[in-house]
Amino acid sequence: MFQVAALVKSLTNPLGLYIHIPFCAKKCNYCDFYSAVYNKDTLSAYLDALKGEIKKWGGTIHRPIDTVYIGGGTPSLLGEEILSLVDCINTNFTVLPDAEITVESNPSSSGEFLSFAKAAGVNRLSIGVQSGCDKTLKILGRTHTAADAVNTVQNARELGFDNISVDLMIALPHSNLQTLKGDIDFMLSLNPEHISAYILKVEQNTVFSKKYDTLGLPDDDAAAEQYLYMCEALAKNGYNHYEISNFSREGYESRHNMKYWECRDYLGIGPAAHSCLDGKRFYYPRDLQGFVKEPKTISDGAGGDHAEQLMLGLRLSKGVNFDEIYGEMPQNIKKKITLLEKAGYIKVNLPHISLTNSGMLISNSIITELLEDEDI
Ligand code: SF4
Image (tube, rainbow, N blue to C red; front, side, top):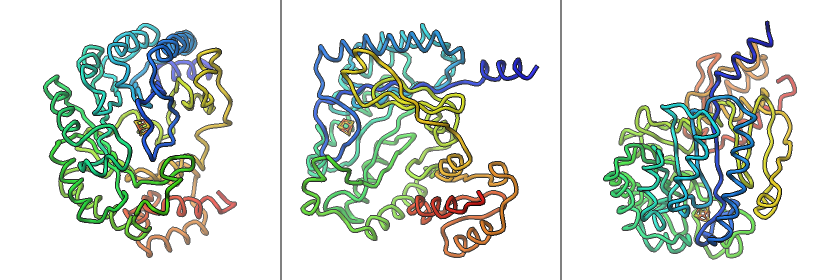
């Protein structure tokens, strides 16, 4: 009986599907995502391997798909190929009629791609705008201008896209509250349904890491000030701050990304793509050639344990129900939470806890502090 119930649950519990397109026209100066320089032949070989994997998984997993996210890299380099890719997903999986289907698009390579994406059934766009200042875009190594971003959003609207997310980077080289205000005003002028906003972090092995000292980055306090300013400005303009780095108009939260933060199941296909399925985590190595030759996944242990639920759940502004995760809250944790509340980092309505905007800025330290306790 239990087995039947588990089977029914698994068949009816929809899954998110992530597809990685690991190509970019040029590497941005801050980026450490897994991507290779675009080349038509390599893309073609990659798509064959990718479709083979989609077919393989589609024959193995019999759960409906309610979100598809095609990310990268630069999926807009796919051009017309987006049609056969989405068709392959639809042929091999049961994609629900109201599924959210997102594709990332770079303003400099959107061209005809958007009309192919629309025809393929894509209903949400995530556009890598980053800044409204051409000088800054150049420093970041982006290949588009502010005018390209405006045109891309305008084209998308004309094609009927009514769910658009834009990326905004903050704490940029030579930035201050004034330049940030300019960037926020630019994003607001695009009238997106969703904004993903990230503090620039200089990662190892990027162009920025080699010239860190000359970048003119704001210090930690100034970066924090920018984050808090941005949270307030976006809230004032009707964007709900629903996750540390994500803001949306009501009803436009990213359904796909919510699966990551709520520890729900998703399958990722492509080099460097991660999955969490039936309590197990696994990933494809960051190896494009290996994927094309013989795609295989590597186990990454158990997924969705208590620590993970707390860590990911606290990224959301709705926070977590501590008791639902752990059972009754131990006294020593209650004490820590009271102290964090007094310091203004946590909002408490036991058993619910969530981070304030200031808490979100130091979320890693808070989560480490809570998880440090051997009782939980
Ligand atoms: S386009 Fe995106 S994935 Fe590609 S290098 Fe730039 S930031 Fe990285």
